[in-house]
Length: 226
Image (tube, rainbow, N blue to C red; front, side):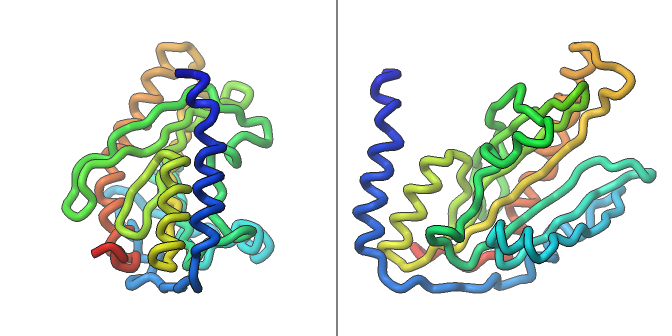
């Protein structure tokens, strides 16, 4: 089984090259509702927008985004990032957080998937979860990809869908949806406390995810398969 799995990336690449050879001119659909309106109010929280500088936006390649920190009683509780791409091609595509998250001393110590939960219009899907550590500080990161009527967490499935939709529909628009929850481990770094903080972050993420996925779905262009 392990030997078979080692061929998966090569198979996907081969299929992708074949599909890209058939790709026609891509459409570049704008959101039907402003991305900035996503999760604009969350009861019990205030929020502050964080601007992405021009150079970082150019490198990341997104066309629209929302980037906010949500606080309660002046304490940062979580942050939200949704980056929308009107189209994707070589040199302009969503960068996987799995590759971008490690850095500046942060390293992944745990990974899993969690259910987003069922909500009208999105069905029941999963999101990726990574716990990162940096010199005793911890944060939990949750993310998924959403667009063209789909919500996906598996990176290989995302790429296959992207290449197929580019070839069949000329559509590659997509959003990266990400939540980050800092864990409170500054005064207590026992394993018991860390596990409790991870559970708290999981609970927060799973409570926000259905609404977030639904609002992203409403903002994005319609499913080309419909």
